[in-house]
Length: 400
Image (tube, rainbow, N blue to C red):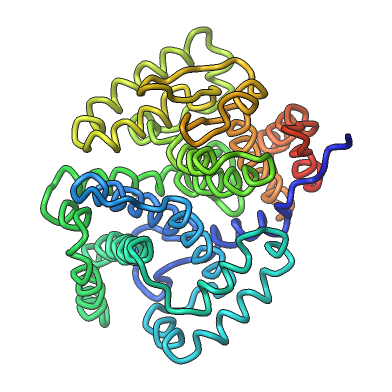
């Protein structure tokens, strides 16, 4: 049987890099550059924390796939609508929601119409959605904006209208104080620092030794891995919990870099024993600075998603089990009860993001030996990848 091409299109992947070029707060005096891709990544990380706190404190069950899909719908729409100022955007949403939704759907039809969720996306963008997952995403959106604007405000509190903007954003966050996670972030310094710790991955740039356009951060990279892993999981026949795990593992796989910074692959590969030693340093740092301040459900996730992040694994009776073969994992443990993670598949998604970062910059005319060699090495490694009958390597080849 001939392998078939995945449904994810190169044009959709290129849109992610449009988000990396959309500047936020470009009418303000900003001490650092804020871009939409990083904001969206920070938003879903905050949403994850809020959702887990709701589960932990109130015993509420979150529909995690719904949360992920709703986030993706909003993310894709934001890329299409680009940088409309929030007050204007909210006013347009009140009076022209259907027209804006139609415009977004029409723009994304080519990229997304083959997915089963496309009709749900149309309904979501056209309607006034309700439910806990929507509240969590809205609260995360406002808090991520507040996090950015607090930096701008303290940099220059005397610019025109900043006091008014700050008041509006603070009020929007206050409307979500009924969520346990927002209460924790506002009241407890260590939880607030956790959100800031994630946010600092916005400032760590990928491929830091070479110029690149658009420059992308570690946090933006993790979002690209998360979304592409989720979409490709639909093609390889992953169960619901595996799809959720792939999104979250993609989102958190570089979390330890908050504490150690990005150590480039050539150094890891060519200095004997270094990679293993770095892993030990990262695990200890994560344990000391993150696991000690979060509730058990978040701690369990972070351990599962960041330690041996590219191993094929599943859970049985609260223990993590590793299998050597991805095919064995899919044949025997592709079921929600095992909470499986196809690590080899995730590594390809990680490589895909790195490959796109290099190739798109080269396409913009900003090139270097490191980018060309890096892209070629990844293409050689992944260009013929076939997983469960899906020719994932075709995505890499499409960009050459």
